[in-house]
Amino acid sequence: MYPILISTIAGLSTLIGYLFIYLKIPQSKINKFITICLSLALTIMIFISITELIPQSFSYFITHNAFIIAILKLIAFFTLGYLLIEIINNRIGDIASNNLYRLGVLNTIALIAHNIPEGIATYISSYQDATLGLKLAISIILHNIPEGISIAIPIYYATKNRKLSLKYTLISGLAEPFGALITMIFFQYYINENILNLTLIFVSGIMITLAINKILKETLSYNENKYISFGIILGVILCILTHFII
Image (cartoon, rainbow, N blue to C red; front, top):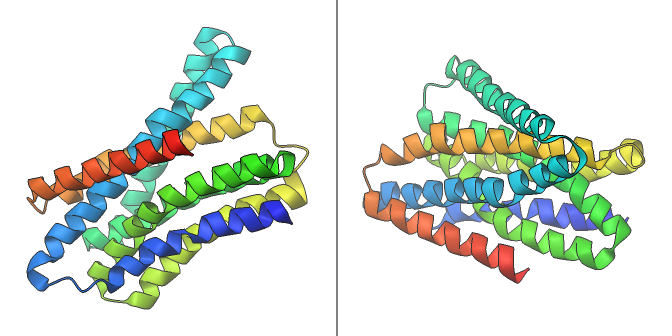
């Protein structure tokens, strides 16, 4: 059960991001606060995708496939991620007119898609090597916090409903132990590196599309360029610490 425990702790660290809704932000500073949170979240999503998910997966493909096949796998599964976000956004648009609320829902869906394969990876790593699994979990915790912010802040400031914000953030966090659990019960001996890496490319397509087409657009609408820069710099620093220290 050690891999399940590690995956659960890593996943529920998303709830630390939820706690940011309790910060006492003056009404005049709310837009600046949302701008920082969203720009931090989009930076984390893009950075993780372009420095971890895509290089790791493409390196595997190029090692085990012809170059053209590796490229086609990358393009195909990245495009699937892009199309999924566009389809979901159109569907949500029919029921959610508030852009901030829609963004929170999209972030939840994207991060569920991200956290399930993370849970699989954490389970497999912990099962094979407890120390490696722990290091991976710490890395996940560090970037799950701003990911939790990216769900909790939009949902809360769109609805002023803390329970709803908690529900969405919790669902996203639970996707991580869910990924670990289904691996233990059903797929422990069937999930291979090829499937896992295809999934990671798919997830990178989801995250980059969401970050650039949706979160960035919403962030720019607040016209707080100085705070956008601050959030991006903070996100890059956090990613570098995660990438090189852990």
